[in-house]
Length: 381
Ligand SMILES: Cc1cc2nc3c(=O)[nH]c(=O)nc-3n(C[C@H](O)[C@H](O)[C@H](O)COP(=O)(O)OP(=O)(O)OC[C@H]3O[C@@H](n4cnc5c(N)ncnc54)[C@H](O)[C@@H]3O)c2cc1C
Image (cartoon, rainbow, N blue to C red):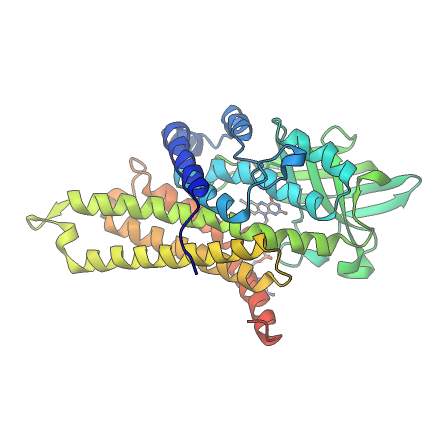
């Protein structure tokens, strides 16, 4: 086994770190405070290739493997997890097209994503969060297409997207077998972004409702087959989870690095607080947990790159472990700073707020354990 990165991976990681330091860290607190999404910066990130890394080069993307993408995403989210969430949502929305789309659909919808367009992945509804099969957005078959009615909530890029990959049911009584995936364009009549959310963390990402009222979607915008949407959604989540929780590693690292330098500088009882064993053990635990999470994330990414058939266990393991780790590490890192960590003068409280989402979106930590337990009981772990 070789843990070395290739020279190309080392270069990509270095470039992403420098980009985060130059373009993201200086503006992160402002966009967080203002609850605003930096559209121009995101467009620049798209042009830098940071939004469509895993889209094949044939469709204008970076054609990057999942391991390299995880290394890059860790660096970008060390800069700002909110901005990175919006950038990564383009890849998330692209996956259903990659997984279930035809060559024509890929050319039509993936290529513009590398040229500055935004996309959103629309699965969650007010009544269907963890239980995706309970979706009630209805796709009624009509002449030459489908009429879509319903409401999606908590959609990243929901208010700014040009394209939406949408999961709707053709028949609620069919449960998961009724789910069908569609690509819907922003200017199809009847599609409207709804309420923009005011969130605890990752505030630089846009999160909105998306409303569908008699939206006619032509047949050629169905991804895969009618009734094949649940498989497309689950495959999308399996392959996207490592990249999503590479963000958890990035947030935790930002908090840890800040805590280490603070502990070296801050003096109490006539000594740097880094000389107290209680603080040293916190720093040691943080370093250990971040390393363990990164290894799990990269292992899951490696399996995605090898196109292994059963990805769910390792994907869920990395998501649950890294998500929980980010919350633990940011909480301990804030503790190292005492009262100063609690103040908005320092970035630490933002890291802790940003970390919380890692246990919630793309499937909560509980749902990851459910997926994992299922694989354990099938004897696959
Ligand atoms: C900032 C943000 C961005 C998001 N972006 C997107 C996006 O781009 N696209 C999208 O489709 N969705 C998105 N989501 C939605 C997100 O994926 C859901 O919030 C998440 O899946 C949980 O669903 P829920 O909020 O309805 O919680 P619920 O499903 O109601 O869960 C509530 C609690 O019950 C637990 N629970 C539920 N079922 C079980 C069970 N069977 N066993 C044990 N515990 C259980 C959960 O773990 C959780 O703790 C986003 C959410 C947020 C907050």
